[in-house]
Amino acid sequence: MNKNKNFILALDQGTTSTRAILFDAQGRPVRSHAMGLRQIYPANGWVEHDPGEIWQAALACARVVLKGMEAGDVAAIGITNQRETSLIWDRRTGTPLHNAIVWQDRRGAGRCAALKTRGLEAAITRKTGLLLDPYFSATKLEWLLENVKGLKKHDLAFGTIDSWLIWNLTRGKVHATDVTNASRTMLWNLKTRDWDDGLLKLFGVPRAMLPEVRESRGDFGQCDPMLLGSAIPILGVAGDQQAASFGQACFKAGDVKSTYGTGCFVLVNTGKAVPKSRNRLLATALAQKQYAIEGSIFIAGAVIQWLRDELGIMAGAPDSEAMAKRARPAEGLYFVPAFTGLGAPYWNPGARGAILGLTRDVGCNEIVRAALDAVCYQTRDLLEAMRRDMAAAGLSRLRALKVDGGMVANDWFCQRLADLTGLPVDRPVVTETTALGAAYLAGLGAGLFRNQQDISARWALDRRFRPAMKKAERERLYQGWLRAVTQVQ
Ligand code: ADP
Image 1: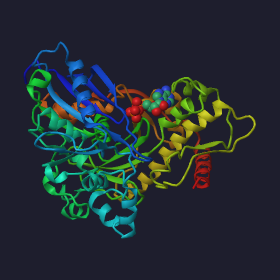
Image 2: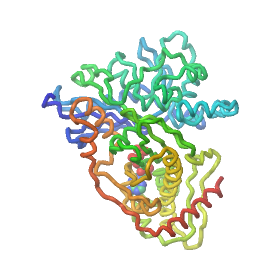
Image 3: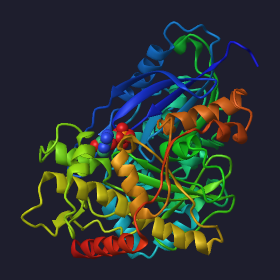
């Protein structure tokens, strides 16, 4: 190993921002730079991003964090990205042919409903591990192929955001994606680990336009030396939630991580066999030929944003901690934040939010507490479904929950999560686990980290929150939550 090459550049392209973080050989973040990303809303329920803006921001952020570095200082680049977001471009010119269609975009809802009516969901789930929903790439790509004018003139390339960044970093030399991103397209078969010809036919996608699928810890070419001053190899790529799972060192079957940002994503590693959820969770690919069961909650930190921005009952999200501490018990008060319907395991797009059990003594503090409680109860909903799936797969019981994301800075929330789920909640020192996961993947490839044990050894606990609530009380409160959820559906 070249002694000088002691840093890894992680590019983290998210839904609302693009970031570059430089990690040292110990896996510590040493520099970072972020830029916001414009959200484009062309119609009700449609969300787009400008691919040119994404690439320029990634390049600009990388240049900021590499400023003053020598050409040989950086051993590798790792990429992590918002998943499912889809775009097409011309291979000859590299020009995008439309804005990228973002994961949140619902324009494929009608098409998904029609496919469900034809009874195709079970077969699609068997192949891809996904449920028939416009969230995934297939109906986005189908829409682009049907609606963008003049496509016949072009030599088409499709990509999720990772492919788009790789293409640009290598100046069109490499058109590739990784298994974790491929597994969110609804075109990739979890068992054969290849694009699925039946699905390509169903969605009208020519195989020739698809990227080559490589392992997350793999060789994705080198960035053009003109871009960042030297030809740095791209050695790790993973979708954001899978990268977070890697960054949390969830390497063993049964390891589970839960990320609390705008929404919440819980992934449990299920090992080398393709899992099957009987409880309407998703099956998805992890790095290193492993798989996971995944559950998502649409509204987590977003409920705090709503209380701050729409109701104006706090100045900043961190105020929620002191307010929750001051709250009176307010027995029977429940906040169901189903602003955009309910995700796993309910999957009810028609549900809407409600605050139930209001009494005269309920004020802002109590409402804030009920909102934080809701994120804990929804986590328990996912864990209950996961427990059933894990038992069916012969996996042992969950031992602890590794958490990360913006909300876990809130100690009160972490303790409450332990109390209401009955599991110890482990908060690591580095909560930037998404970028860290991409850096670990790339660093393994570059020889900065020896193996997974080496990475596991670096995982450092900041604090463990142990359940302190009596079981009877936990169950009584949870039954109240289940009744509240029934009332909004
Ligand atoms: P994303 O990556 O989805 O943009 P982050 O991981 O940056 O999200 O987390 C930001 C979210 O966390 C916001 O929704 C914010 O409301 C919430 N949040 C941030 N700090 C706190 C806090 N101390 N207590 C509760 N929620 C918080």
